[in-house]
Amino acid sequence: MRTQVGIVGGGPAGLLLSHLLALRGIDSVVLELRSREYCERRVRAGVLEQGTVDVLTAAGVGERLRREGLPHDGIELRYGGGTHRIAFEKLVPGRNITVYGQQEVVKDLIEARLAAEGKIHFEVDDVRVHDLDGSPYITYGDGQRLDCDVIAGCDGFHGVTRASIPEDALTTFQRDYPFAWLGVLARVPPSAEELIYARTPKGFALHSMRSPEVSRFYLQVPTDTREEDWPDERIWAELKERLSTVPGFTLHTGPILEKSVTPMRSFVTEPMRHGKLFLAGDAAHIVPPTGAKGLNLAVADVTVLTDALAHWYATGETGLLDSYSATCLRRVWRAQHFSWWMTHLLHTFDDEDAYGERLQTSYLDYVTSSEAAATTLAENYVGMALGRL
Ligand code: FAD
Ligand code: DHB
Image 1 (cartoon, rainbow, N blue to C red):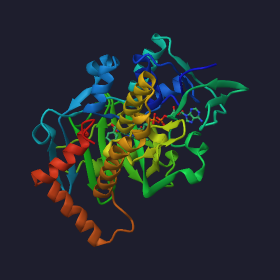
Image 2 (cartoon, rainbow, N blue to C red; image 1 turned 120 degrees about the vertical axis):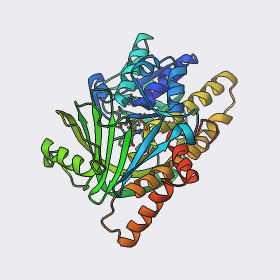
Image 3 (cartoon, helix red, strand yellow; image 1 turned 90 degrees about the vertical axis):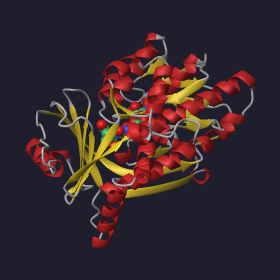
Image 4 (cartoon, rainbow, N blue to C red; image 1 turned 135 degrees about the vertical axis):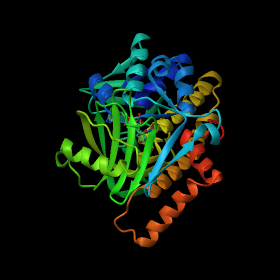
């Protein structure tokens, strides 16, 4: 089999890349380890930046997102017995975020690809990439081979593509955090109209949502946490304790539909390219989810990669492909800093002394009382416009 762009991984990065390339008349094949059902059911991100919504809409996959997505013009920061709104409409006029589940984006993209007879192979195992400096090809399954002009590594943090690059060709940067997030999906109407990021002495908690009937929550938990340690009653008791800290707030409870533990990590690979292999999304970088940036970075990467590939196919010039990594890394590092900063601002650290805790409170007080500081948070949260970074 032969294609122009061989794409490893059918998450948001791989699927959107395939779709954007098709719109430019470029052929691709997506090889995905998991089943379609698994990919469509994997509960993860929920916050789409304005730029991400714009890209999906311009690509013709924004119809359901426009109907079912929940636009938000602010978030709440809750700490020290008070709650404070960061008002996007005032601080970054005309820009906001939309709450829409990642698995809904994945469903929309799979549907669009298959409707256009795009090639996605699910449940493909033993994917390996070869001859990255020459005539690249991918082998998989029992002896299948896909020849291509270039390979896109969109196979997430634990994928095979980054691992296929010789170690001395990459520089990696990493921070691991001494806690994890327990993510919870519950069939219960949201208890507030906006997202609530709460810092409490018992740790961080986040109130989010998916629809008028479904809420999404996250709790800071120890790294060795197992889902079995958290029966439903314990989850609700802990969420109540961490979120019901201001008068007038009542946490609604209901049946829990899903729970999972996510480690917290910051990670960047440089460069995001090796020969004819281009890394995109989580395959190249990870952020802790506190800033809600991972999915948005994946979308930004494949937007840049599509332009670079389209330019190369149209003109034979490699300039944009050569600058792909540097272009993406500017945005990646901004998101790295923002995610690291939000994580430090809102979590409790076991090794933190009273001095560290006072610094955290001081910064929260600053962000919630100074328009300049609040604007910094708002501008980063809604996302820097594509091209400005
Ligand atoms: P992935 O989604 O990981 O997709 C990679 C794909 O490759 C998968 O389908 C996988 O099955 C496949 N694959 C892996 N190995 C192979 C292989 N060997 N061969 C073939 N296929 C393979 N981001 C946000 O922007 N906003 C948020 O609010 C947010 N919240 C989050 C909350 C949680 C709890 C978590 C875990 C993440 C969150 N993120 C958020 C991050 C976001 O989910 C990821 O950044 C996003 O999934 C990255 O997309 P991707 O396509 O690069 O990688
Ligand atoms: C959600 C996830 C995040 O990581 C975040 O910062 C905000 C919201 C969510 O899944 O809704």
